[in-house]
Length: 130
Image 1 (tube, rainbow, N blue to C red):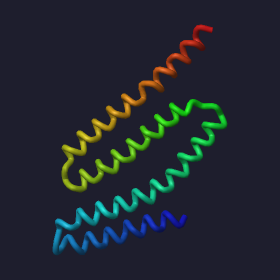
Image 2 (image 1 turned 90 degrees about the vertical axis):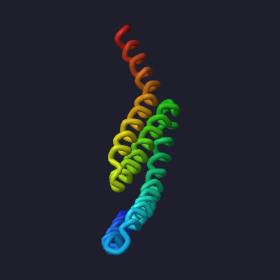
Image 3 (image 1 turned 30 degrees about the vertical axis):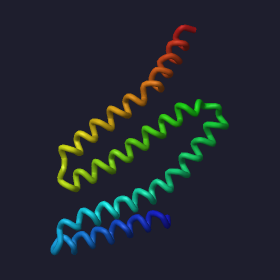
Image 4 (image 1 turned 180 degrees about the vertical axis):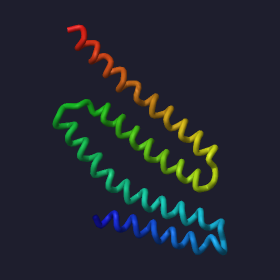
């Protein structure tokens, strides 16, 4: 609960600063937004590391292939980071770049998912053959 209060506090302070600064120096508003976004991202990444460690422990105990878990975690990380960068691009008024970034990140995630899809199809074929 403490972390969300910090994140909300940072966001509200950033919004207030942006509103005030936009009146006098609008070019600095984007910098405040970027700094606040990065701080919030680091708070979130700190909490996500707890989840990643827990998933790895569960994977080790259950015998699930760590290769696939690592791929899933990387794809999730790409999705979060891409969404963060896309938001920054849109906030900057660069929707064209944001759209290209979105397409690129989706393509990377799709390529990374090929080993998982391939393995899943192999398992399905084995089940169907027996």
